[in-house]
Each structure stands twice: as C-alpha cells, then as structure tokens.
Length: 482
Image (cartoon, rainbow, N blue to C red; front, side):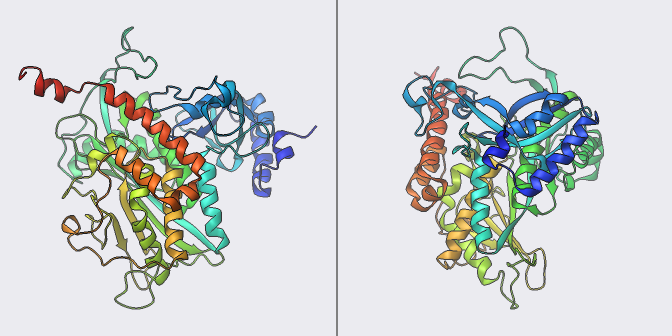
C-alpha cells in the first residue's frame, strides 16, 4: 500500500533522496526522538515528538495533527466554532476538530545542539485527502517563490533580528499564575542583563559574553549562517544577523532562530522575547530588517545591480522597490501582525512611519544599499517586527515586488528626510492595517480571499480580547479624577 507521501507525490526527487539518508541516520541510533514541527499562522512552531523507531515510518506516512491548531489566536484559544457545520471555515476538512497531516521536509533535518539526542524536522501541512492545507503559510511562500521561478528569478534574503533577553528572577509558576482560555499565564518576573543605551560598546559585549556565546554556538550548531551577535540600543536588547540565504531557507531559518533562542535561554535561566516593545522602563522597540534581492535563476547573478553610475538599483530593482511601496500598507498586518508592534512606528526612532525609500537611510522604510559593481546590492525593508510570520512577511514582499515588475512601476523620489516626507503614512494600528489589507485587491487575490478572511478573523479575535481589558493607563488617568 502506498504511503501518504507516495500517494499524493508530496516530495520532490531531492526530498526523496534526503529522506533515504535521514532514515539511515535514524536507524543507526543517532537520535532517540524526532520533533516534527510546522509553523502555524503566527509563525509559532507546533508539532509532535516521536521516538526514532516510529519517526522512520512517519517520514513517509505523515503525522496526524488536529485542525484546531489552525484556529488558535495568540492566546492559544480556538476562535472558530469547530464543532458547528463546516467548523467555521470556508472549505472542507475542518469540521469536528478533524485531523490534518504533517509531511516532513527531510532536507530541513537537524540535531538540536541543546538536546543532542533530539532530531528536528520542519513539516508541510496537508489535508487528509492530499491537498496542501489552504491555511499553511509555508505553502503560501512556496507559491510566491514559484511565481518568481516562472520568470527565471529567485529570491535571496538576509535577516537582522532584534530581541530582548532578561534574567528570570521568578518564573511565576504558582497555582494561580497559569493560563486559562483567552488569557495567557502570568509572565515571569525578570531583571536586566544590560542597562542599555551603550550601543555596540565592547565592554557591554564582554559583560554579556556568556549569553552571546550561548547564542553563537547554538546558531552554528544548527548550521545557520550567523554573521554577528550585537549589543543593541535598549536595556537587555540584542541582535543576531545572518548571511544571505535562498528565500525559503531564510524563512525556515527565522522560525528556527526564534524557537531556538527561546529554548536555550530558558534552559539557562533567561527569558528571551521577540515581542516588539516589552513593558519595561526605557525600552527600545525591536525590529526585524529583511534584506532582499532577486537573482537570475540560471546564473545566480544579482539582478538588482545597476549598470550605470549614479543609479541606486537596476530597472528591475526599481520596479520591485516600487511594488513594495505600492503595497506597503496592505502588507502591514503581515510584516507587523501584533497590536504591540505598531508602538514601534514613531518618527525619528530608526523605525519607519511612512512608505518611503532612501539611499543608505535608516529612517526610510526601504533602505537601498550597494551600487554599480557591488554584488551585495539589495533592498532592506525595515518595517517588520520580530514576531512576524516569516512565510507571510516574505510572501508579501515577493507578491508586492512582482506587481511592480509586471506593471513596470516607477518608485517615488528617494526621501533624504524620511520623517518629513509627504509619502503615504503606514497604518498606525492593527485595525487600520487589516482594513488596508482588505482594500488591497491585488494582495487579497495573491494570498487568496479565503486566507485573508481567515487571517483577519484570527487577528480580530486578538483585538476583541484586547478591547475588553482595562489598561493601567485608563485606571491611572480616570480612577481618581472622576
């Protein structure tokens, strides 16, 4: 009897070859368990851990998971009526908390440096009838990259990721500190590792070397192309940068980086968070800067390199840039998906507040780097927050850039003073961003109306819970006054 993978031709020939090698490694006893993980709608890894002997068969047979995982908001609460007709979704297979199937991508297999008897493999999501799951975000990026491929193009991406790490003083694991539906548990009490605002000083790096070495060895142990470990502006704020990678590998790396940093930090008494703006004194917001260029698929040549002195980008690069600008507002809930992330959009803050571009200008949304004869010519999008689902963020970039290429769009003039520019302001809140996405007919078509409606529903559930909370600001402002 044919396996799930064979029946539905879920692997490429390259993946099939990698699976044979992986099966031999598992049979040799190299690991005791394998974590089968998939990135959910928030870019959070979920999955099951199988003993190695069972993992061998699961490579081809798949791993069953409940479809309610697609129904979770950021509090892990199911926000669709899964036991009603259709399960609250617009396609078959979701009613009654039915199963879907994880199919391992054997080319992603790694042994976890912090758990050396544990293997890890990233998976794609399929419905039980063999259809790629319509809500699976890795599949959405794969579609976007396939559109590039049809034009003989490929995406190269580089990651700069900011985050905070604190020392845990009290993990808050008391009986009354736990989660309940719609309300995450009490966060840990923490203290600082650095005072902040001593940007890139060697003294602060040396004081943080224990953590930096922990992160370096972890990233290198995962065979990720880590470039640097840096002390960032704010208190207890750090940054990891990575060398250029092909598009899907960069997205896969991002979900693995976030998960790995949180896991290794927790094992060593730290709390790492990729939340954009934690509620701590003198905080500096964290961003995720996404570097991108398009290459000739056949030769690998960077097609953003201009031919003439005085040009910042090639004609193709300028068209791609114009597409990013044209869809910046519509793409906002994909690059900045949380309520908290919009607190970063502040003038004169090294974060963008409008859809502009500039030559080597860190105040612009799109920072253009390189030039004639420079192989690393690229566009750096500074709009993203570190919580963004990388598959959605990167898919939004590819779809937007392709629209610019197909319509031969021309970008607006560069903004030498980006915070004083008259270009379109970015959405200042998650509701405004969701409205912008719904109004962007092109992005809705590329992402599919089914997915956009689903994603907006998930985010609106998050907003509804937020709006029911009485904030400390409200209490302080009005409790004594009135």
